[in-house]
Image (tube, rainbow, N blue to C red; front, side, top):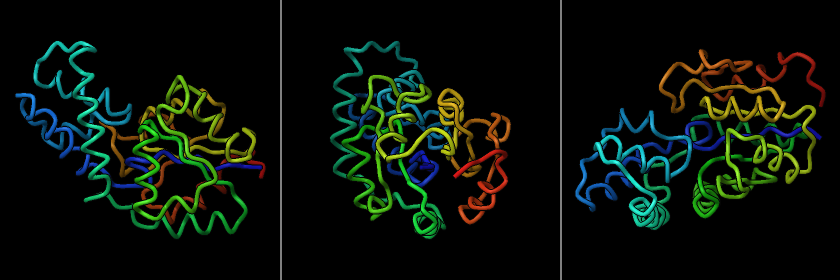
Length: 223
């Protein structure tokens, strides 16, 4: 059984504003400068802890794990309480997911966002109903770009690696797909510091209504 494995932030949902607000609330509460949104766009994709580390580096702080730990807890608590103030699915997401389910695809989310944040966000946006499996950044010992969470998402969705596809927006997603041995389609409206086409995906789309056609052009795909 083939699985479509989706990244979350910057792929399925536009979440940047809520991430920026939470990051800057945590930083300013601890005496640091806010990070402009245009900078935060280049910091996301590896989970909240690394986002905080990069926020401290923006402030020229030589951070330690002991320094980051309380900030991380503050971030998780605030973000969980404000999980979808501004976050919304990208245009065409719901219609595409519905179509793929009707076509017989299994669907999974594989994100570096913690499970305790991912599941409530999907519920808040009424997206959870589409997915057969959800894997967060802390579901397994290793997160993307390692293959483990991608393989885990496919297995939990009841599928096999052969015929499965990753859809993401960043080098983290592309490398995870490569490590997992599956093709990857990238969206060009997500969060990456360079054009995603330069990162070597198999296909690039600019809208979710292009995804079906992109899947059909992947060579050797077996359903």
